[in-house]
Length: 320
Image (spheres, one colour):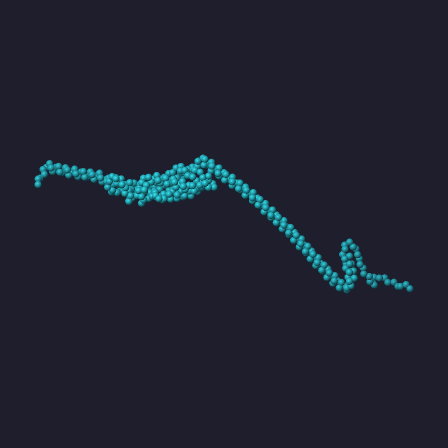
């Protein structure tokens, strides 16, 4: 085997050094390219640079990963998305206190992508998910608004927000799902066009007029019913008074008759006892006594009865 001369040895050393340097340069170039980074505010899916194919089987969170020089991360936001809907036209329910016309509201909400469904989100919606989320949100709010009366937007804002929120989340969950979850939800300004305000005011004024007329009719009916009740009570009181007077007169008449009966019975018994005591038993004498007693009871008659006896008669001798 031939020995190498000095020149050949030098060439081999130079080639080895160049090769080593080349390898080191390649390593210095390829090694940084083989690492991919994901920030704390992102999710990542592996994507091949040469073909653009995305691996949706695994979702990567924040960190540094050795993926190789031909791989990178397709990133989706891990923090909250902010959606601002300004001057969204809605139509209210045409209830008793609403004319059911169009007005405008502002809606602010935040939502986030579900980490374990980032792959499904990419396969079904890709980067168009934000537009689809906004479109479905608009549709859900408009469909829900027609069941809310106009006054509820000012008097029951929490109720309105809760109904809108439920409608939006339900719409997002309808297949195909959007793979996002609703976080904050707020109903902002409510802007009423001048024409709507005028018609609403006119409707409210008309409602007040109707209520006033109804109140007047009720008051009139109450007065009439009260007058009837007062008249009925007066008639009942008059009837009760007349009945009471008649009953009292009947009681007085009955009492007088009873007293007279008792008096006559006592007089008859007393007369019989008197006649019996003084020895009057003849019918003629009884009638005479009764007649004299009745004459004595008359106020306009002055009658004196004297009884003659042997003591008060002057006796004289008979003429011869």
